[in-house]
Amino acid sequence: MKTLPLGQFIPGDSPVHRLDPRVKILTVLLLSIVILNSGAAESLVVTAFLMAAVALSGLSAGRIAAALKPLAWFFVLLFCLHLFFTDGRPIFAALPAVTHEGLDRGVAVTWQFVALVVSAAVLTMATAPSELVGGFEKLLRPFNRLGVPSHDIAIMVSVALRFVPTLLEEVERMREAQVARGADFGSGGLIRRLRKMATLVIPLILCTFRRADELALAMEGRGYHRGPRTYLRELKFTRVDYAALLAVTAFLIGVEALRFLPP
Amino acid sequence: MITAQHLVYRYDPKDMPVLDRVSLEIPEGQYVAVIGPNGCGKTTLVKHFNALLVPQEGEVLVDGLSTKDAKAHREIRRRVGMVFQNPDNQIVGMSVEEDVAFGPGNLGLAPAEIRGRVGVALETVGMLRLAKRAPHSLSGGEKRLVAIAGVLAMKPAYVVLDEPTSYLDPAGRERVLNVLWDLRQEGISVIHVTHSMEEIVDADRVIVISGGKFLRDGAPRDVFRDADTLRAVGLSTPQVTELMWRLRAQGCEVRPDVLSVEEAFREISALVGTGTGGGR
Image (tube, rainbow over the protein chains, first blue to last red):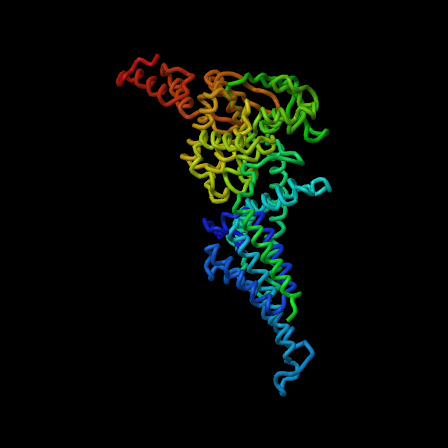
């Protein structure tokens, strides 16, 4: 597959897919704040919320696991660091470094990261990239007056995403061309392999600059200019979107409020 | 009407000019083929038509707007659409329909109007079926057609294409050429830069460029009649034309300005006295 591996869009027609991208983006933002602030009780509620979102989105658990997999070692490391390097009461007399406090913190911090990744994965898997870019653009639009060029940022991001597969193809072509002439990318230690990669990276950079030149000409030829433009699909909140945003916001504020309740 | 008057262009002031005092007029609705050996200035010439290049001497006017006036560039580029050689480097959108919508979006049109134009442009090039596809999943010919649709969505009066059939298989080439012919039928000027002689026998007009000057400018029949001049600058004539010339060299009575297999068939049939015969 010549696409980005992490959180690749899975086309579908679930309620989560159909939501306005802005609702999803705002939900993930709010959710992130809650996740980073949550204690044990909140984290249970948030976990339930995430599981409900995954179920509603029609994404299989396997897809979500696939998004987490590349980060598995990071999670293990994170957990171990907290487990071994937190002061407190030892769990085993023989192993004084492992403490009750360390175990608690390790579980909590690792859960936070897993939850953040899962919420981002649901967002990117259940939202077409173009909708995602469109959603960000529209959310940034009120800041145009403060000098945030939302339209230009949107074009930049979508052009970048559009060219990822093209550039990957290009790398593959150059690799084949060099292999055909006797280059060997498969063997040798890590350092040797990295050094060999330089013979791909340099031509890739040069090609990309040439492409960028041509692309700029083509864009200019099609009337591109900085500043406001219009889109094929102008995003519009439906009643469902309003209801969903309201419900999610109320829910997450509620979760935050949990912490202020007397125990 | 696109008008060039005594156009001169150099990439480097020390070098010989790439275009050396060339003048031409292209009326609306004409199918113009531009041919010439590599590096003769074909691409440089057509880049002047939509103000990607501005003449160093002389002038280029598009419907009366001078390309030297930077304020007119947007309007000139809307009127003169440009399809570049490599479609990969001109497709901006993450899907076919979004790419075609890029131009109209830049014009600030309402979404309903954009939708309409995208539909018409994709219909014209026969790509409506693939509207939702990602550009990188298309074949070379399909990418070309998307690039053409992207330009058509601007509703141009002139479309310039730089070697639109290079790297295409015969079927892809055929599709692109048919689309160009349809545009001509709709009254859009087509300015087609190419190496292939076979592709341009139906053009209204052929301009042969060599060394920065127009070597020939006329109807294909008149241009190809003069095979020796073309050969001298490294160009060939269509194969059937070449065949007629060889037959003439052998003393056979055939027309020298044959362009199609049909015509050649008639000439040869008349010669050997069989088939439908008659020739002219």
